[in-house]
Image (tube, rainbow, N blue to C red):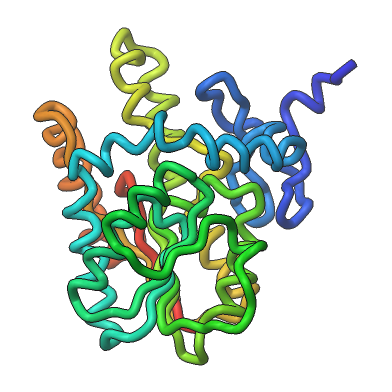
Amino acid sequence: MMSEHDKISKSCPYCLSTGRLYVYHGGSNYYRCDGCDLIFRDGRQHENGDDLHRYYEDHYFDDCAEDEMTGQRNSIYRRVMDAIGKEAPPGKLLDVGCGCGFLLNEARRRGWRIMGIDPSVKSMDHAENMLESRLFRGTLETFPLGDTFDVVTFINVLDHSAAPWKDIQHAVRLLNRGGLLFLRFPNGLFHPVIQQISSGFMGNAVMHKYLVLHEYSFTPFFIKHLLSDHGFTGIEIRNASLSGGSVFSRILKKTFAIAAHSLYLASAGKMIFGPSLEVMARK
């Protein structure tokens, strides 16, 4: 039988320090590590990694690809490529978790030589039809050795992984020396707090669909810790641009974005509290 201590604390899967019960969301407890600040979901990422892979392989497209297919994320992909273009000239770009291929299409349009990885069967079928280019259906663990890249991107992918630190290890292997790593993910400082605030209001059901917690949730402290552990330098973290959606969704996101950017400016970049974060780092 699970003790009361086991219910309120778990060993961190990354640094093995104590993770304390932090927030309840979507039927799962999430714990926040005292050591590295990782926020992790109870159970599934530790016990059913194969089940997690099969879900993304067979079901993710039907459950989650609508915002890609309707163009809601196109502005994100343009801004990602704008940011990358300021740091690196067109070269070889690998998009991990490329989904339906829209970021790759934007990169190709700008002169990049592209490669995409994704386990989703239907997503990769769509990407192949659009790109007729270099694609690999699978994961970084099964990606063949030999090729290296100037840029590796993870756009709203790393927090879905069964072991994000292993994916970062693979990214190190795949990047050329001086290569650029670009991450985008939900802000672990934002969504749990909004969940806790909204849980006391009648609007909790409305807010629920705007809250994003997957297998893991990352804070700026954890990401700096993770990337530094794997030898990355020049780590820059900032509030990310927002996706589209309904009129209400855009207004809500814009309100959060203005408030977050105001905090960012007022704190000289120390307070990063937008709904999503972008990270750039060099190998």
